[in-house]
Length: 358
Image (cartoon, rainbow, N blue to C red; front, side, top):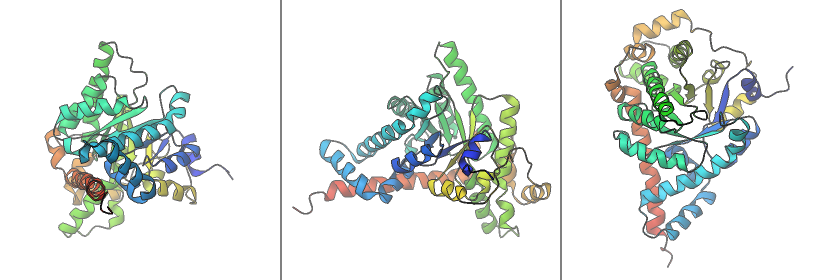
């Protein structure tokens, strides 16, 4: 019987895994266990502030005092820079050991910029400047895909987010290929560029469950749980066949299958801290399941009951101008924007109330 942890076995089967947060304590533990990257966004950073107020509220207060002219947004992004620099430093030994191929910290641009490629590019360049091992995250929506291409052409490592479907993954991969070709033409060294294309697997299942409820469909929820697995495996098959230089990344976990069904693929599996610890403690066998197809009866039920499954699964299921209005995209952007507003509210409260006791 193997004494190696489930995560170590996952790595040995060729799949990288990341910690789905840049919380410093969690990340250090993850790296010790074999994680080779981490992802973040303003919502995740806000969660870290709420989970560890004793650590982060004094940092926010100090930033407010040290920068008397800063707006709430400027304080928020100064904090994200500081959290990001420390997290990137934790991953830097991995980055250096692998000659820049691993050890990336993925930082997301302001979700409010999702319709403006120029603002995303400008902020992306800044985020990439805070550490050598940053991957800049933009949404796989029309403006975001344009930004991802241009950032890649500038020699910046990228990661696509707000991405749930095969059409989105392919469009991003094609944009990245154009960006890499342009960078090479311009004499930019692309050896350390390891572009990532995230598919937020759990959120496609969430979306189809909302459709089931709103349309009162008689479909077993456990069947719906296979939708994201089918989508991700189909995207992987296409990426492998075409030799895209981007690597698929699975995120937004809802069950162990979002790990166990993808083990063995040349991919990244980004797992929340509590999930990978739970998997390490489980008795789930770690074997290569990446190329195992989803059961044909399940596929038939998904295809017959959900047009949005077909739109997500088939490469030609959606045109690029439909991405923004796909149900999972709208719901996720709403979550990101509300989370950003909540983070601003925390900073506003500290800013306005800091002298209340005087």
